[in-house]
Length: 294
Image (cartoon, helix red, strand yellow):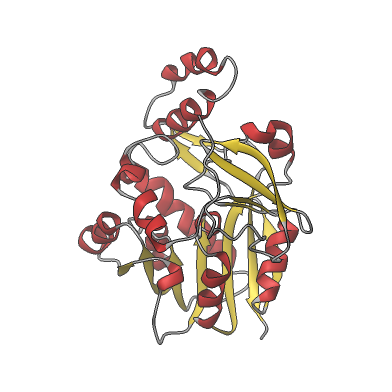
C-alpha cells in the first residue's frame, strides 16, 4: 500500500516536546514518526476535528478490522472492567464526580456508577452515545475531548484506551486539566511502546494501527505529558484486561494479514468461541493514576 505524503500544512514536530521528528516506517499507508529528542511515536496525520467523525463511525464499532466486530457484545466484560478500576481507585480516592472520556456505549462508566461514583461521559460516536442514554440511562454527550465545553470540574477524569486516539494531544490534555479540580485525578489506560512485546514485534506490534491510533507512549513520555499540565503520577500497574472471542479473532486476523505467513497462522482462530472471555496475555498494557498539583 502506497504511503501518504505529508500535507504542506502538517506539523511534523513532536506533539509532546515540540522537537523535530523522523520517519520510522509506513503502516496502512501512514508514516509512523519518532521524535528525535524524546522518542515519542506518532502518526503522520494532519490533526483535524473531522478525523474523529471519519474514523470513529459506526463501522469502527461493528465492522471488525482495527475496531470491534460488535462492541455491544462486550457489555459484561467492559462493565466488570469499570468495577475493577473503581475498586482499585478506592485505595486513593473516595467516589465523587467523574468524566469518562471515550465512553462509547457507557459500559465502563456504568461500572463506576455501580460502585458509587457520580458522573457522565463524552463519546464522538452518536450511535454509541445514544445507546448509553437510551438503554443504560447513563449521561453521555456526543463529541471529542478537544472540543468539550462545560463549567463543571471533576474529581476524576478517566481516559481508558483513549489517549492514543487524540487528534490534538496537547489540546485534549489542556481541556482535561481545566475540568479537573485541584487535587483531582486522571486514570489513564494505554499501551507501552517500550514494552518487551512492542520491541520484539517492532512494526508488526498490534497497536501500530493508524489512522485510528495516532500516538504510542512510553511510561516516561506519558509522565512528562501529564506533568506539563500540572499532574504527577501516584500509582501505576498492569490492568486485568479481558476481551471476548469474536473481538480477539477479529483483531488477530486483521494483524496477521499484515505479517508474513499470517493467513496460515490465522486458520486455527475459528476454534475460539465468539462469546468466550479471553484474558489479555501480554505485558504491553498499563494503567497509571495522576493527581493534579497545580
